[in-house]
Picture 1 (tube, rainbow, N blue to C red):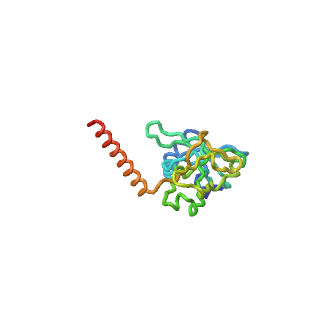
Picture 2: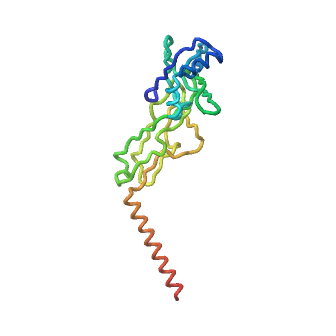
Picture 3: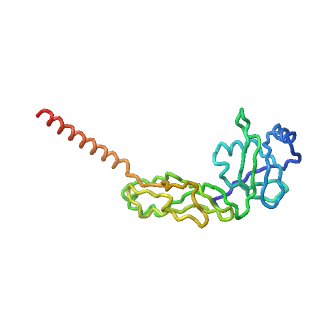
Length: 216
């Protein structure tokens, strides 16, 4: 699985409707509903501070959670909607969907680089830069890869790795259609400075030549 799936703690709501939702908010909770699968919808409340923290961290709607509700078995869920206050932009309701093993979902999968010790570009002092340390993929809930392994052992300075060069797990595909860059090996800063100086010297020499031609 994709690393350790974070827990999302919630409480079961005994009441439904606007009155119960308002009461939950007064108690520092955000009302919500869990739906999908072969089970009836479950009204829940999530601690406001915990939800707000996760929302600020980003990628909330593309993160798989292990939902923990007292009196119920843990279930894997993904957020399908977060309703917000139109003025304060704070969460007022959350919709979570239970996942079956065959459910297709969008998740950010971390990238793992191998072969750095033998990469010619790195041996020459080049720097491996992860342009995308994570890749958003469409994956099956029952077969989520822990990471995407990318071999950089043959890369030289100036080489790049694009998504088309990566072998993805069966059933997984990127959410972006174009062939985007994942990583590259750039020249060491010292070499860059030297190249810049050389360019400057060449430019100066050309300028001198132009001046002489003008004088003639």
